Length: 170
Image (tube, rainbow, N blue to C red; front, side, top):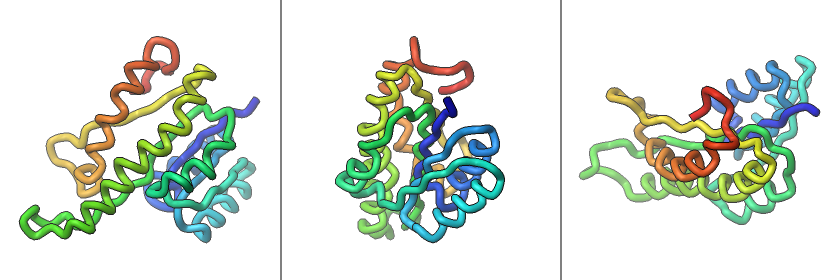
């Protein structure tokens, strides 16, 4: 049976590149993002290269949309919880709280919503793999805005590590 990878934030950047790479490596890709037109382009590119791709257009900031779109999925072997954004990275005294809310809603709550729906299925199947890293000493704008994502992953990694992780995953 072909392995399936679910990739959030697959419409651009790292998410798009990851979807293309995993499809090339033989995964059936489930690509998600907010921009349906970009998902359609990605699907066409993967299928033109002989791969399989399903697309789901929704916003991870909405718990209802996450549940409606992801609850029916089965047999997820790899979750790449990539959806995120960097907004309003001015000095804190100049920051706009609307930007902070958008980043927290996407980068933290979106990650939690997706993980809450998909992780139990992966754990039950014994197929879970996840990776999250700290932004390092000289973080990029995106790394600074997504660093809070690492903390919620730690308990999941700890719970699954003895039975679910491939060597090399974190």
